[in-house]
Length: 464
Image 1 (cartoon, rainbow, N blue to C red):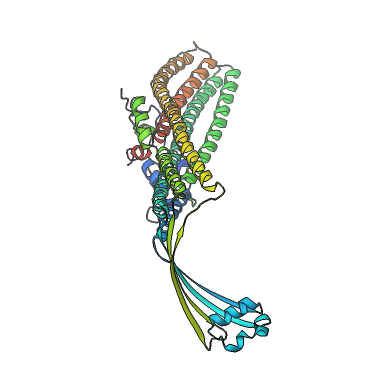
Image 2 (cartoon, helix red, strand yellow):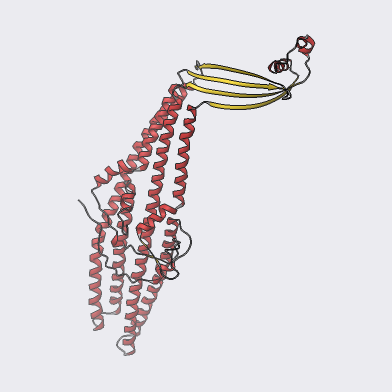
């Protein structure tokens, strides 16, 4: 069953000037000195995805993951190192070895006295070494595969951050729309109350109503004035939250042009949302990648049982004062096999197996959580959808009731209390209708987030 969330609001827009008393720093070409800049919901999402600091954090995370691949690939290349070492020694063995490396051995150096009590000798040793893993048990290759998986995981983190930023922008925008509508409803009720107060005041001067009705009318107006101040304060808070969600700071005049009734969305059956969630949710896809990374780590741990072969070479320069130097080189190969490591390899294999099992369990737990989140958002959206129809009917009924009560009050058939009650009932019915609209759109936005379809949703919202 499909329900399309497009409806006509019964609340008229009064175009309050206070809407554009709040700030917004767009590009200079968009911001005028006097005229307010229009901002659609789609534009708000676009700005948030461009300027919210969390987006920058995701960019750096993605950039760091790319460098992991470079690090992993470095093992495929020969490793070159150069070292410089200085020694001064009277150790018999090191002293003789230093002279031997400097190619300064003479017959006199074999004198037992000089061998046992050599004079201090200095040596500058420069060594250039090269190593190359001919076969490293496949650890480098598996490391590269892991690095690529880490990059995919970082990309999904970046996507999840973008979805969160977009939904926060949508929610903040909707909250401003709600606050504006609440201000307008209260303002309209206040205008009506003031008009009734003027009528009652005139009838009191004519002696047609008692003073208590006049005083009660004044109290009613004062109460609505207080509600208006509270609604205006809530609007300020909502605008502040919107600027924070968009990552903006500087002031400027702004008018939100997307209305609650302009936003549309299709409420597919629950099974469709669950199916989409298991395919699209970035955190679930990341968890599946983390399982693959854990499996690669298990393969690397098991490879420790196999031998490794390394090629190595060195070029060495020894000198005492850099006037004369002695050069030498060495090349060779190393076969390495762990015969016994204190059960370290076995423990690493078992640890890696445990990480694989943990990743599998985390996927199952995440799927259960996704089911709950999707169902909760879906039923909230459906409930809000049903409330919209009821609330719209209540507004019509309250408006008609107020008309009847006002006519009968003017003819003296009803008391003022009944008139004020009818006005309050209409105000509450209007607020309930607005809140039902707002509740549906917030729930629908959260449903798109729970199902991983945020960008499908934001590409279709009003003003796009």
